[in-house]
Image (cartoon, rainbow over all chains, first blue to last red; front, side, top):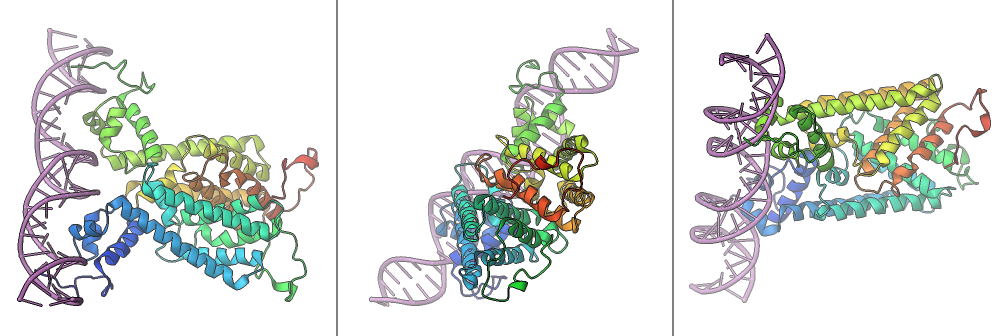
Length: 220
Length: 220
DNA sequence: GGCGTACGTTACTGACCGGTAACACCCATG
DNA sequence: CATGGGTGTTACCGGTCAGTAACGTACGCC
C-alpha cells in the first residue's frame, strides 16, 4: 500500500534486503542500548519495516541475538588475523599489534564495551543460544593469546596469555564507565608492554636495528 | 488475613523488617539473574511479601537498584580498608593485599562479576540514578589504586594504577564466562606481581627477611 | 479502649513484550 | 497472462511489566 522502499530507511541502507537491514539495525541497537532494552518492534521500525517481516526472517529474538553475536565473532577474528599478518614470525610484535588494534577499537568514540561480554551480563540463562557463542569465543581468544605468549618465548605462557586477556577484557569493560581518552584504557598498551618486558626473554639478536624495537617508554 | 510472618520466608530472614527483606532479596536476585531480568513482583514474593509492601518501602524499582548499588559500594570499601589496614606504611604489600581480597571474592563459587560493572552494562540510560553511583565508585577505585601506586614509588604511578584497575576489572568480567578455578582470573595475582616488580623500584632494605617477600614464582 | 503503624490481600491500570493470523500488494520470472 | 516469493499493513493473542487504589488486619503504645 505505501511501499516506498527507496526512502523510509533513515539509515543509509538503501539497496539491502529486509533481512540484512534488520540484522544490521539489530546489531547496532543491541550494542548501543543493550539487548534486553531493545524490542523487536523497535528493531523492525528502525530498519524501516515492521514486526511481521522480522519474524519472516528470524525465528525468534533469541535466534537473532545469537546470530548477531556470531557475526561479531567472525569480524573480530578477521581483524585479529589482519593485525597478526604483517608480523609473521615475530610473536611479541604480533601481541603488540593485536593490542593496538583491539585498543583502538575499544577507545574509539561511541564504543561501549565488548558486545560478547555485554551479552554475557545481560543473558544469564544457561540455555540461551547466545551463551555458547560467547563462551566459545572467549575460550578461543584465551587460547590464541596463550599460544602467542608461548611463541614469544614466555616461561609461563599460560599466565602471560591470561594476563593479556585480563587487560583486554578490563579495557572493554571500563569503557562503559570511563571516557575513551582519559580512562584507564589509555594505559592498557603500556601495561601490556611492561608485562611483555617482564615475562619475555630479552630480545635475541633481531634482524633489524635492535635499539628501537619497543618504541615508547617501556618502564611503566 | 493470612499473616504468618514466622514462616513464609523460605530464606533465613526471620526477624527482619519487610523493607530489609526486600532489600536483601533484591540485591541477591539482581546480582544473580541481572537487574532487568528481575521484576518487582519476583522480588516481593521471594522476600515473602507482596508488591504493595514493596512500594510502601521504595519509591520505584530504579530507586531500589540505586540503593542496592550504594550498599554494594559501602561494603566494597569496608573490605578494601580492612585489607589495607594490616600493612600500613607498606604500599606495595597493601596493593597485593587488596588484590588477594578482591580476587578471592571474584573467584568464589557463585560469583558472577562485579555488581556495579554489570549494572553499567544493563542500565545504559544516562539519566538512571544508578549511573552516578557506578561512575563515582569506579573513579574512586581508580584514584585509590593510583595513589597506592604512587605511595609504592612507581615512576608512572597513574599508568601502574590503571594497569591494576584493568586487571581487576578483567578478572570480574571474565567470571561471567569462565570458571573461577580454571579461568584466567587464576593468573591475575601473578600478573599483578609481575607488574609491580617491573614498575616499582627494587625493595629498599625491608625490615624482615628480604628473600621471601613475593612468595610464589614472580616471573610469571 | 483508642489509635497509629506496619503489613497482607485483591484487584486493577496502561504500557509493553514476543509472537501470530489474515490479507493486500508489487514485481520478477515463467 | 499467470504464478509465486518478498514485503507491507492491520489486528490480534497471552503474558509480563511497573505502579496504584481500596480495604482489612495484627500489634504495640499511650
